[in-house]
Image 1 (cartoon, rainbow, N blue to C red):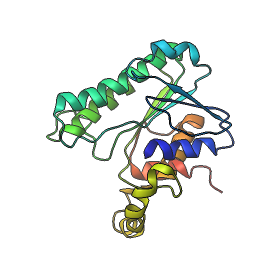
Image 2: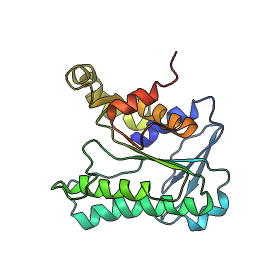
Image 3: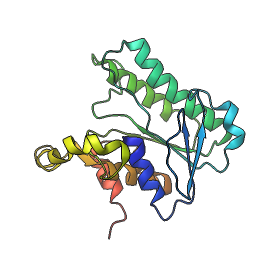
Length: 211
């Protein structure tokens, strides 16, 4: 859901001229700006690096739930996959800007009791140490889905009615998926004041250039 929403914002942004998505399976999406590369092993992009040109930013939105998973499996699907993907790109594009979708309550100390938060924290910490131009960690909470997108139809029916009451009760835990995408784009275009963006920072970054 997050990846599709961010992609939607990128394809509709006037300053973005080309978007490359790397998937295991076809997305069935078509757009004049869009190029899709199919690759089974997202932890190692070495075989497809020759196909990539002029990559300036990486918006890493892939993720899995921790429900039903032990820490080793979740680490492999979260930490290992993310670092392998980004490090592969960084070997060819050292000036890369990376935005990573983590989650609210991620544990930067890596020592807390919540397994997923520790693993996400470890992933964030390692990404921030990579020798690239910049990295930004996104920690969204509740995200209102973007209407009309293929993968958000089911989510939208359930989540959209909750947006206004949750926004009123928990303003620092609620944003829209569109704001996440816009904030990522602004990070890539002009950077951000901080490397870790909580929900209130995401909203502010998304509307940074609003008149």
